[in-house]
Image (cartoon, rainbow, N blue to C red):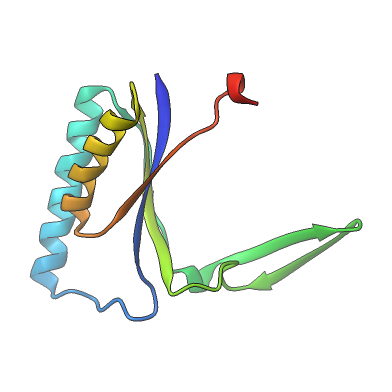
Amino acid sequence: MKQYLLSVWHDGAEYPTPPAEVMEQMFRDVDAFNKELEASGAYVFAAGLHPASTATVVQSSGGQVTTTDGPYAESKEQMGGFWIVKAPDLDAALAIAARGAAACQGPVEVRPLQDESED
């Protein structure tokens, strides 16, 4: 079965923190979604991320390694979390992502992971 990255995106610069009752409902919905994924056998791994402002970028060029603060991408949209799921095909992964998007109240990008046979 193929694996897919379902990444949750939001506007990092202008994303307002929802009221506490909305956040609590989102947490409950995402928790229920995670339990559904686990029960179905589709769950591989999931995690929320700290804000992109906490990122450190590591680059290597000509044998020199440098690190810089902040996100690598200069973008107002930032990834806030992700799931790795197993699904038989893209349509099934999209159906899972639709439930995840509803639970976290935000867009979810779906990308297949490369497998060894695709290298």
